[in-house]
Amino acid sequence: MAKKMNLLMFSGDYDKAFAALILANTAREMEVDVTMFFAFWGLMLVRDPDKMTLEDKSTYEKMFGMMTPKGPKELPLSKMNFSGIGKSMLIEMMEDDNTPPLEAFLKGAQKKGVKFYGCKLSMEIMGFKQEEMVPELEIVTAKTYLEDALNSDMQLFI
Amino acid sequence: MAKKMNLLMFSGDYDKAFAALILANTAREMEVDVTMFFAFWGLMLVRDPDKMTLEDKSTYEKMFGMMTPKGPKELPLSKMNFSGIGKSMLIEMMEDDNTPPLEAFLKGAQKKGVKFYGCKLSMEIMGFKQEEMVPELEIVTAKTYLEDALNSDMQLFI
Amino acid sequence: MAKKMNLLMFSGDYDKAFAALILANTAREMEVDVTMFFAFWGLMLVRDPDKMTLEDKSTYEKMFGMMTPKGPKELPLSKMNFSGIGKSMLIEMMEDDNTPPLEAFLKGAQKKGVKFYGCKLSMEIMGFKQEEMVPELEIVTAKTYLEDALNSDMQLFI
Image (cartoon, rainbow over all chains, first blue to last red; front, top):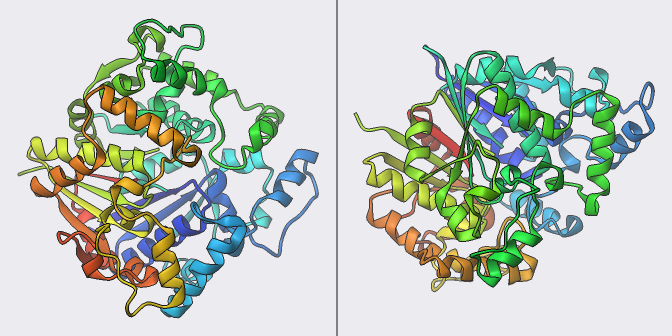
């Protein structure tokens, strides 16, 4: 039976998302089943940058949606972000090594069949709508996450 | 046999504590055994805000105890805390969605039989006394944590 | 058969490294097999502070190597670092309790046979050379990490 990995994507940091997506892509190449559960700040990674809506949102939800990163490109570094300078430097260093950008690893994970779960409660609190997210995202409860995680061979909180 | 989840609570952030306690409460509703091991900054969540003592503490321990959060209400956000403005905004958004506050999820976990372990070494370094913590907290060594975690179906470092 | 623990060391924070190394040392005393996989900021912990080289590095790689912590002593706290004041205070509190410093736990882990893996891709992006790191560090790919982690009894992302 195939091994199974479950990643709880909480942080919404560029570097952590990068690490997680490299693990997800590599695991799929090894025929390991992979679930990524996006909650809280982790949801920023799976927002579609072209589909923000302001309809049916409270003032706070509108503000929050505008202040927070929209998709992989806008995520900050977890360390040494320096208002974006540290991040630009790291991205240049990645390009020097011919490492593909974060967006490519996200697309790769989607194509390779990584299961994308979004946390229902986080979506409701932050006011995000299904249509603002990447289409692969299936909105589920904490119970669905736990059933998947408890039956996986490894779980990480990222 | 019941499944088992073990959470190492390291960070002491409001949002991460919230995520962990939702998982702990949901897991108990699924009859999953749950252990939460509070270490370092994670101990701030299980301080009793009404029971700070200055007795038998070094100057540094007194300062540290006063400078750090006392219980769930005082925890900062891991991101966008903005000296508390970001946190207030998130709490308002949670109230708009009728999400109970962090304290309710902490009480829920205690009532539902989540096992609360506190890290002995962290308690000693930070100078916290048993009587300053929530009464459910059992002080244990890293060995006890590892025995519990190694025999669990999933483990997260939060 | 011996139990097995796998730690993904991502953060490069003093306090998190401390927690991880206490777990690693304690696990080895319990005859648990331990692998630590150092990636991204986690690599700072296993740099040899006396062996920085500037040869064969791009300008960014040189800058990056100089701006980032070299070995355990230079790591910042994940919280309340206050430009080093918080860290000094915590270290004094640790000394008051006769807790050995981080370097001692790192040496202990090496002596007790913890397996040290370094992430190949992170090394390449950051421009770190094998000879700049502690000699125990074996450079491996994400695939090697995953094979180890998927066959462990517990995994943490730290």
